[in-house]
Length: 305
Image (cartoon, rainbow, N blue to C red; front, side, top):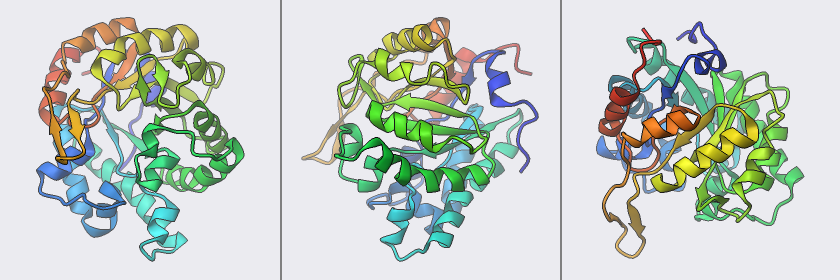
């Protein structure tokens, strides 16, 4: 379960890398029940083999970076299930270990990104797509720091500060990761050139511009058509490699509790994203191993033996 010999930041200087797709939709495809406030994080305790199998599916599809099942894993969320701090920390470590085991079975080097989801993911009420929780930056930093420390101690290659809806929460996360000695990427959940909380992406990206710990900045869990403008803005504002992993483009019908509309995720668009500065490219909700395989076929680079 050793990490790749090449640090992820150095790898990004050589070319683009393919991320995995949505972990939850792959787990659902495997027959897992995710109707729970802990979402996929519940399986870290109840069915870790299913999580590892989902990671395996993305490695076989050609993903070079796996994102752990810790997006909705928090000390507070596990406490509601009667798990103490030590048990919760062990499950956070397990999320990295499961991904690392799957990564080790790849034919080429595969990196592991430990997911650090937003505060709203713990609330499980949809506020992760709104931000503006009524908490200050200092309060959000106190919430995130213990989880960051637990995940960093497990030895991931990078911390994925992902689906961040609000620039204030980004400030808190960037403070929380200081001193953990693990590089990070910062990825906002965006809509039409703004964060979900309404701040211009140009201002939100600027928070990471001078932060050497941040090795990539970008967007995820957004519409595919919002990706290219975000890549161009992130590259211009920060000068850093850009990370992008949009949703499929389908819509969620809350009344019918089902997905609707046609997918808009087009692997061919990744070539344009890469030309604009994207170096970590994958998918989020409803983007599965078949999409990632098509993406890998488009982006495979002779620089990567």
